[in-house]
Image (cartoon, rainbow, N blue to C red; front, top):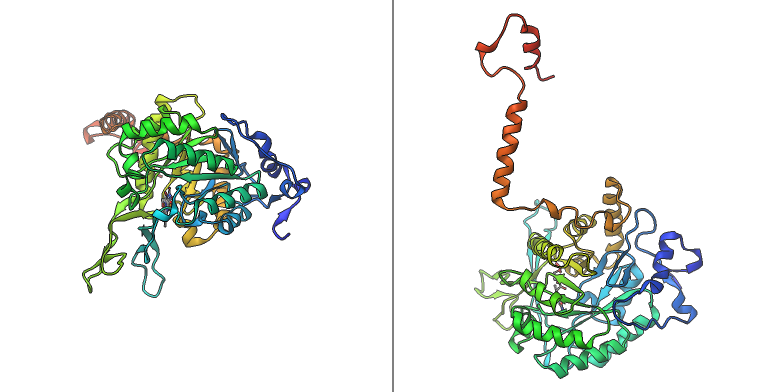
Length: 428
Ligand SMILES: Cc1cc2nc3c(=O)[nH]c(=O)nc-3n(C[C@H](O)[C@H](O)[C@H](O)COP(=O)(O)O)c2cc1C
């Protein structure tokens, strides 16, 4: 089959991927169900040589840190299979709930923000708004497709994104049934900003720490595989729900989901975009324009995790505007282990993972890093308070003054040291 290579012919790095099934030393129990010859074959890796891009978090081994973020790129079997074939380290499927009949989408549901490029060039898309809901496909269909994927790709990481109403029985049922499909972990969507909060789901739960604590308690009492809580940036202090989720037993945090936004108003029709029958509703903003905000949120969560959950196998997945290996490096430098991409896949396609792996390896080569752990969190220590920056600058000026070369006034020239004094003021 095109695109496959035999495990026996893989190099050392590839063997690391191939053997990932053995490394599923889950913090919770998990059945690996490896077996048929077909299952013992792996896809060509996105990064074949160079520094090791693999990451292991919560007992899950990702071939590389690039993970499909929940959304259209993980919406059905065909596209998720494509992601694995192209070499993505993991896939987070589109969010599912038990009753898809309550989920009714509209079209158009996307709107773009474009940069004004040079005349004659195609304007670059820098911002993306969506008013898409969670999956409108039948729950049973999504379960069957996730099961099939795990059977065909047992060594690749498939994470189910789930969302439910404020009802313990519903959460227990969805967890039990999705686990039976054989997924590796859960990502809980506590963060969708549109549509679902009207049913007290998604962001409505993620913004209320007492509800979040209770719901995470139900989830973690039931789940036997790792659980990541996906956070909303639409809150004053994102560390509060992140802390609550981790204290309530979640193994990881993912941030950020989309930012509540209004893309714009059409100045001919005076109607907002995206316009559905003349009306619109605020939606979720993503793509490269959100990256600085996402980096700030990830930085705050990482600092909190470092201080309050040290030495624990708690993971952080960075999301927001990633389209290159350099963008991924920035999230990892702040403490993320994995990096999710959603809109970037909608703009550049699944094969883009290869480019991003190459770029990330080039960054690692430049600094002599041989693994992701070598530089994960390395930039976190360089954030401080503004008052501390002022103090540091004062001290630096003092030192520079002391080191200043040359005469500070013409009255200081001496006859004896004249040549040496001249030298101190020459620049080349
Ligand atoms: C069209 C679209 C649909 C999305 N659907 C979901 C979803 O079902 N569940 C979810 O957790 N996040 C969803 N997201 C949010 C993304 O997973 C991601 O958190 C966000 O878009 C920021 O990352 P990005 O800039 O790489 O897209 C969606 C995003 C987009 C653009």
